[in-house]
Structures are given as structure tokens and as C-alpha cells.
Image (cartoon, rainbow, N blue to C red; front, side, top):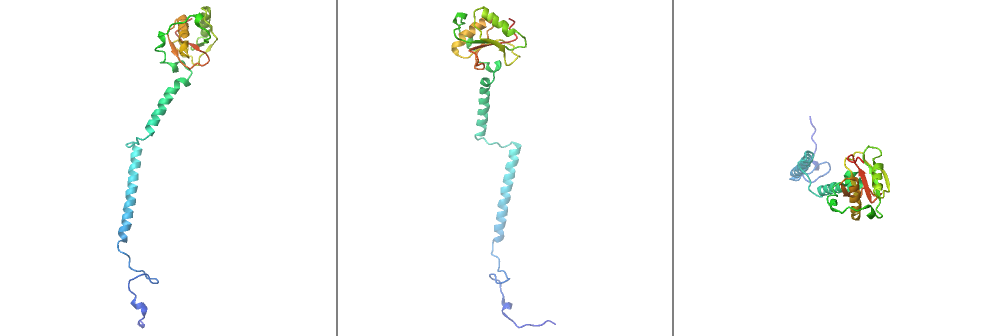
Length: 200
């Protein structure tokens, strides 16, 4: 048998603001706010995922300053290569207008320094070419081996435009026609790189 207690103030508790261990009624609309935040977070995550997949598949590319700088660096490296390399092939393409220069004589060599380099595997080729030049009156400062041994054509290189005539005269003396302006051989004003076509 249950015991009946007299009525007191705790029997009249109604929904309202928090009192003691009791909570008041929830405000209306709080569930919609939570749903809106969840939907926004889901949309952001889906958007990021789509963008990452597009970048990985290569279907989307940024057309900003990256491409021009990349092409500019590639162009600059391509144009810088001839001056950095000391191989005869690196200076090709500058001698198109050199054939028209008048060939100088040994008496017109002046202070122009000339070196003869062997660009093949044939030993003594530079010495033979040097002997042919000095025998004709040209002054040869030194002989040696070129940086490459696979040259097929003999080319006479000169550094300054004023030395083109001397380079033409030396090429004529050796029986070759290829004359080019280049800074690939800074040790002399005119550098003769002998190729496989030169027999001496």
C-alpha cells in the first residue's frame, strides 16, 4: 500500500526556464539550424572532392603565370645553351651571312690569334693543318684537341665581326667553306675545329 504525502510546491512544477535539475522547453527552430550547418559542411566537402579529382585527372588547369614563366625558362635555357657549351655544334646557325665576307691574306692577319683544334679521332690532324697554315704565312698560336671527337665537318669560328675576313682567309687556305661567328672558343680570336672531312 503506497503512502500518500501531503501536497507541496514540487507538485506544481511546470515547463519553464531551468530550475534545479529540470530543463526548460527547447526553443523552436534549433533542429533546422543544425541541419543547415550539416548541409553546408557536406556541400563544401563535396566541392573540394570534385576539385581534387579534376586536378588529378588533368581536366582542369590554371592558366595563370605558371605557363608563361615555364615557357620563358625553357626558351631562355634553349638560347643560353649555345654560349654555355663549347662544342662546335652549339654555335651552328650563325654563319649564314659569313660567306659573303672578303677573305683576308696572311699579311692582313695582324694581331688576330688563331688556334687549330682536332675534332676527330685522327691523331696529328691539328699539327698537319697548322703546318699547312704556317707554311702559307698564317700565324698559328697553338694546336690541340677540341672538346668533341665526333665532328664531321671542318668549321672556322671567329668571335668578332672584324675577324670574319681572317676566318674566311684561313678557311680558304684549308679548302673549307664553313665559317661561323661564335663565342664558344674564348681562348682565341679565330678557332679552327677540324672535322672528318679534312684530310690535310
